[in-house]
Image (cartoon, rainbow, N blue to C red):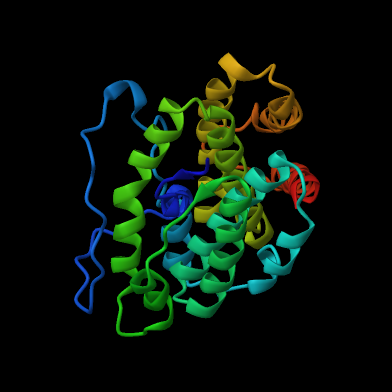
Length: 260
């Protein structure tokens, strides 16, 4: 039987909502069913770094950096579907941060298809879907909904022994976010270089999550690929120089190519 859960929340991994209170129309978050247990609390911080950096530097939206929603039809294995669910949710975040509603909706539809094929039904209400189309709905209001439900969903999957799906989605989101950053980075964009350097700590935390289950067949390949990426980050401290940037850029692009 398919598990009926609210999985909208993986969108927020790379795209937590801002601290501003939305002033336009809001959508109502789903109510929590039970308190969170510390044991199953989401172990990584939701990251605002990428969207804050892009907005601060006023870097234009580059839609060609995202994964084509039509690629969703080529994913067959559970690993491919879970990894690309993470990719698409990061793309939703990237598009929403620029208020590109149609692009975000296209990626949302692709993510919904993968959720269904993974046996995780995402009950996107008509109100939520329509909010992507309605310019009167503040983008921050949409992000509040996904942010509020993220930790509950992570907890649900852990409680139901679906850590492997969690890890693959997190991996896909991380790789896509890093890919976007490295593609727009250049030696003269210091804020982006510092943000890339900061992904070293996040990568280390993700690898710690892999440790107890790294020998699962479905996780072996992504775990090993992340280890190689960790080696590229090993000498990085507070920022990255031109040579380090090129190395990480190539490694991330190669890793992403294997995913999508």
